[in-house]
Length: 265
Image (cartoon, rainbow, N blue to C red; front, side, top):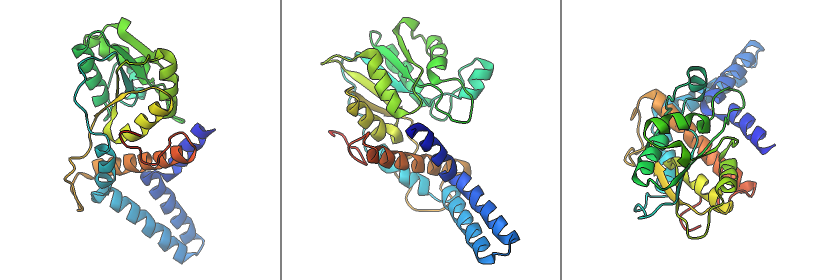
């Protein structure tokens, strides 16, 4: 139930969709003679879209998430690598059979680099199709094609293709590999997603070393207008809103212990 509620809620609340719904509400209010409501809905829609696309709001919301878990020194020995899904264009790969990378593709590239550097380490790819409305190939189904092309042998891969969200990534991955005391596992995901991911893996009893990648901010953006192109700014705002809502939702539901997890707990 949590999965379905979260997907439906996000469909309505993400900035672009919320803007469309507010404009639609304003249009209906205008047609029915409710002028004040029409103006309010249209003004709110403009404000949300302008802040999301024309300002550095998204980067400023992402930056604290990205800075929360700095990348540590690389351990001398690694027993395994867990990479979370979100790095492939699932719909395109389902249709074309390739391995087209999405904006989060750094996750898979970094995993391939780490796997080549630590040839004895197992590689867990965790990610099914987490979309409620769109059909696509899960990352665990696509990854063997890319990683194989980059020299990572198939016998090293552990494919977890059932998870639909980060909570299931953690629980299902632990169930597959059953990490032993003293083992060192790297957790690879986007830097802005690391606080939630690390907290969920800890809660699931799967100790990991956070290895953030796919940074979206320089940390020097500051408050300003037109610091990036509108499409990227809108994407940053959308990801930031989603991640902050996800953190609080997982905290309120008891799936993580703190609303803003940090290293050491």
